[in-house]
Length: 190
Image (tube, rainbow, N blue to C red; front, side):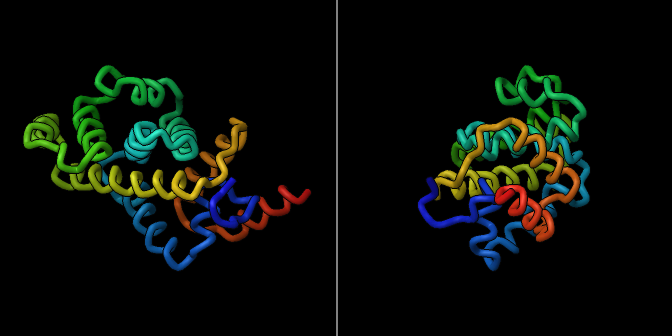
């Protein structure tokens, strides 16, 4: 049960973002830029970073939501599961392994990112912007994970919920779409 009153038809982060739309707007905009904006990292790769960090933070809602989005964007589900289990042996590029290592260190403590981590990423072909964006995505998802779990937001158990959420994320990005929220409210009441 959430620690504050939230719209029951909007579980997870969505209900929290609706609760304070003024604080949600800049967070949504930043997320949209980082995960859906112009980048040399694919949207699927950026979702992998969000998934890994959420998984390591043990945030069930965010892990499941971003796993679903990553799976859709990658067109398969094995890679995401392997990244969560051990990204060093997952079927991703050396550059992506190096960036995931940086994200993992940020998740633990930003000061855990070492010069060797950065050198590894650059040697594997990562640009300064890719390194920057990886750190910022990791930090942003630490915020989201703590936000969701710190207020005990509702975490649905049904896989079908996350499949639909993954579709909404990959279709609409991280923008607020009031018509979708109204539809969810009608479905919940129906």
